[in-house]
Image (cartoon, rainbow, N blue to C red; front, side, top):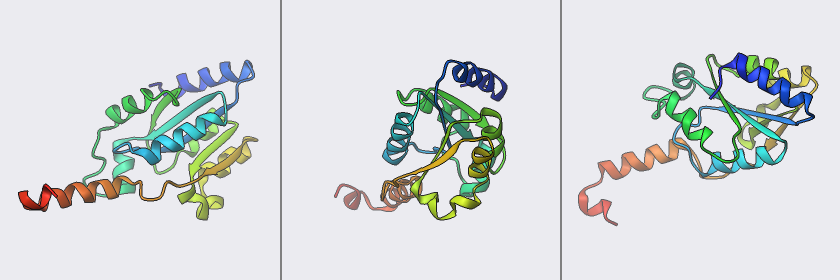
Length: 165
């Protein structure tokens, strides 16, 4: 995990070597197969994948009370352990536009569930201003942290006999 200023320096060095930098962002709370597929596909688009991770406060604002389930440092460590992820930085605020402005990735990636609002995303506007492009990857249907939480709650509310089924 890198602080933003260190990440910017690292990306400048990579860019100087001709590397193509890809950046995505999100809460990544309760990492699931949809996250894994998005990150793997994003990494395949370039030479280095940067993940900008919402801090706990911004994740709570975006996802609601009781979230995130996993604290930011642990989420960052989980992401950093994935082979597809090269760098992780934690950011505050409702969007990662500032991270995009400073890192200046060649490609900004988001899941297909954001494609309907693509032109309104501050990160898309930031990457476009920096000369990069935005790519929206396919959404993995049925893969969501909310669905996982609902399943866990349902199992917890079931009687022991129902839970064994």
